[in-house]
Image (tube, rainbow, N blue to C red):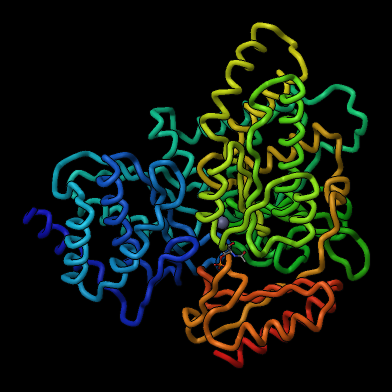
Length: 553
Ligand code: NG1
Ligand code: ZN
């Protein structure tokens, strides 16, 4: 123990906390300007090693990325052994570690927590921390800081998995703990094999055949475009993917006028696309490829794109899965009675929630941040969650997958099988394709393509499932966003007092108005979201509330 204390103190002294830095483990771990993060990343390396020791030396992950943020920012987050985000119970500890002013304070915080959590610390028990980073220039130096943090914990071993998308790293952590192959090759093979089998299960001679096998993808000049390029080599000929903004050869700046966040929030054409792409089915990834949105350039004057966002992806997945479950039920299979649920946040377009409910889906709401949605979705047999910004996935319970397995075995020996057997096989392949650890733009993209092809749909067919209510999002820069606190899945402001009443008064002026504000967990801003009957009204409501926020902070 004394030796461990000495190593930790020596190593931590090499990573002093820059003055004035205040870190908080927000919706997506720690995020800040890349150059200020070395101390935080070193300390998160220690945190990840402790997490592994606490979890019986299971592998955990540490990812260095700032997702859709500007290229100068960076960030770090920890993945639990299941591949999902680190338990929220440890977040206050993460904050205390990151905030300790000196190396001595840091070591004291570590030992207090180790005592409290009864972590087998200072024992040479090998535990693995898988490391990944995106393509940001500050990533390499920060990776080194993470390695040193891990090396400061006796028994902890860092395994550098290289430049990865965030979901790839989460997938690898999960697989490693399942005792299965966790390499990047295996990731690509699993996605491409299940996609191919899903395509083979498309009904022959569909009623409608408006599916165009060509799709254009904006890679946000980040890691996703490059990985999609590698994945494409394994994809069947039935899908033609054209990658733009792949970030190679200094083609453009990460997330600058490109990527899923830009397309979704600005509803604008990303760089690298133009009106000559009008009508094409286009998709956009974010900087670390855990978000996916689709869009279509309309070519109409003034109306730049038709956005097909995370809510529409959720609706498409829900529709397909519900149809397959219905086939199982018709075939008398108990799996057909699975509890199916959709999970959204307050940012979900009101029209999507109405559509899902009309379809007979159970819809639940959680605060922003995928950790909340993921946790809620895991309560269902089949839980589908998406944020409007395109982060989401489909979770299958072990119980449900066990019910499907015998049907698959039967089908394998009894080809071609009944409708319900085919439905079982489709659902099985979806569970293999779609990332079970975290939202994954690459696996989500392949599932969208497989479903559109199955249904013979164009992007317009998909988009016309329902009509979005006009909405507007704004950011208000504030001195201290932590002054704002909210309740009821972030739909009501608690602090500062009086602000909710002001928002209510503004909202009441607009037919079908809905508006809420919350502090961002990843940027120094308060976000304003407004929905109303017309675009002008949504814009007006958002602007009026943004002024109220500015006034009261
Ligand atoms: P913040 O900055 O807390 O709003 C944003 C997204 C979240 C989530 C995180 C993590 C919006 C409005 N918010 O969080 O949904 O994706 O980033 O990347 O899109
Ligand atoms: Zn992201």
